[in-house]
Image (tube, rainbow, N blue to C red; front, side):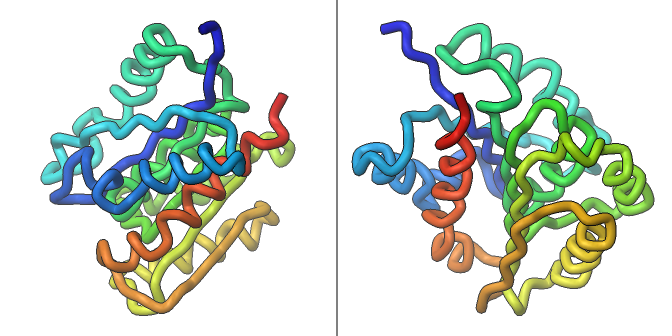
Length: 202
């Protein structure tokens, strides 16, 4: 049993915990893809942002990058390289994905932001982070939101920056708001997108 697997890190929303993605159906969606042969087996990690009620400077992002990912790679049968590692998040977790995915673009082959609640503290730096990514080193990028999402203004502004700088990305706006009802309706699509990123990876 020497097989090694890609890893998907999924970050939960504010006021929720690491089981949110499970309740939304992420594990079921992944199992269905793998069992049907539509995706290779992969590992999903659900980090717990215990400091959701504090500003983003509390260190969660640094711990994920510097502590959790190395721990997972050292203790589980992962494929420990950028090409087999993806990061995604919803709401506050999507805000973390904006920050960590752009600042650490060299660590992830795909970054997915689902109704991202982009941190106000990050707003002055986002354009700088975008322009710092070499054009040939961009990860795959997915952004989606409901047409009644309370964060839609900042989300479309972020998407507009990606478009202005010619960054390839998937942008989806569906009917819905900023809620678990919306995310549950699309979770299978999210998981399929992440899995597709590994289908052509050696």
